[in-house]
Length: 249
Image (cartoon, rainbow, N blue to C red):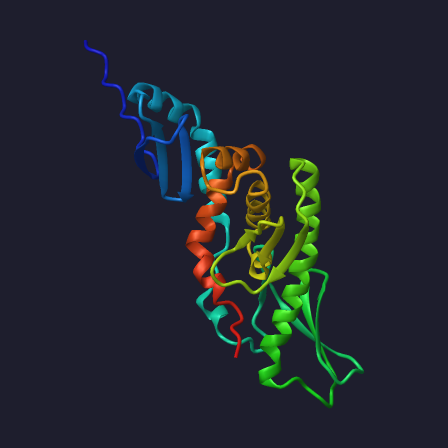
């Protein structure tokens, strides 16, 4: 009696794309979304080598996919003016908003015990037009504190020392590094998962050594942030909605 046929290997839960790159010096895997994985091959790499490399990194690929699947998306409603009740984002989570009275006429928004607390005088409730700017100021303050902490840690880790830090309302990019060595970050990064904001900080610090996006630059980024491609993928997927968060006017 002949042996039963071998069961077929289960199909991967993601779409695999293969790209040959003339600039690539080594095999590389990019996980840009939970359902797409890209295998980047140098020109002279054989397919058996590439397949073996892919097989060796299946556990890493699955971890990156699970991380992307677990990250919260930015709801479309976040693009609307804030009404004083809708949860506000911070470090990848949507925190509830509670209300409390205080004796000052001007309202305040504070972070306390994992939630936002909107403080206002009982006789002077905040007007609708004041709520969105209030939320923006609170998040910008948190962004400044977080950016200082991340930059301090990244300086110690990388040995790269910027001349300054600015947190601003940039719309065209998440971060930049000037010729004078000043790192600038978009305040909205504080709403993203912490590892995404850390990636942007590492990215900009690496520009202190490489003023381009060549292979040496990305190798330096990967040395300090091995899963950077997953964080770039999150920004590509959620960045547009994040940029619309708490609009001016």
